[in-house]
Length: 253
Image (cartoon, rainbow, N blue to C red; front, side, top):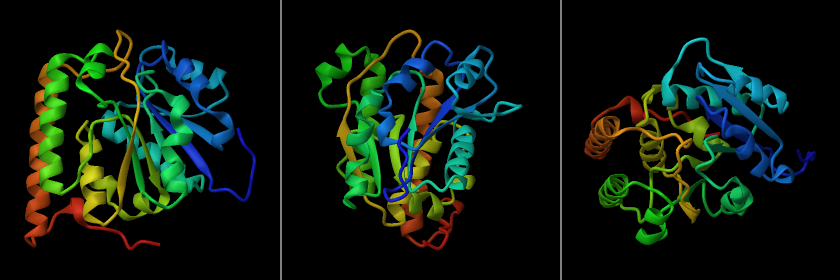
């Protein structure tokens, strides 16, 4: 890990669940000279994820009970803020995302052009499908992304990525403890951040779908989509003056 007191402190968080086959490969790809610390939060895995994380000498937090994907991220972000991170990078430890691009992901934050950066897997339909993304997931991703862009007034190519970076003030401002403990957490934090005025950017990353990569099934994907629609409706109601815990912002430092 890099050792400097001048540059912004960069911490990677990895929300882990049964990632024994991929967590080490993900870790090896992270450019160590670009980050100060890596924190793994295990959500009651039933395999050797924790053992491997500790073997790699990674700071490891273990949930005694499964809190869900969103619940895991909440622990991740609190831990990173406690360790005085200036930039927090979330990387799924399932090797679905190219962690070698970590420096590229945070450059716009370091140059103060963005507050949040996403690693988008949708550079082209052909590449996404060739990389193994199931057709129904690609179509759902496209439909939901178009809808989110229309409602939020943005022009992002993907909102549904597990490779993202946040400036510290984003996590200090949005009420992420109030967000869902399920997968829609990812969308709630982006919608809430946008409502708070933070700038969201993206870079393209390769698509890597394979057997060991984590993925929700069709039924969970359907529920996820419906929850996104609910979140977008809440955003529109917020714009109309309706109060919601998703948009109860903390005062920015």
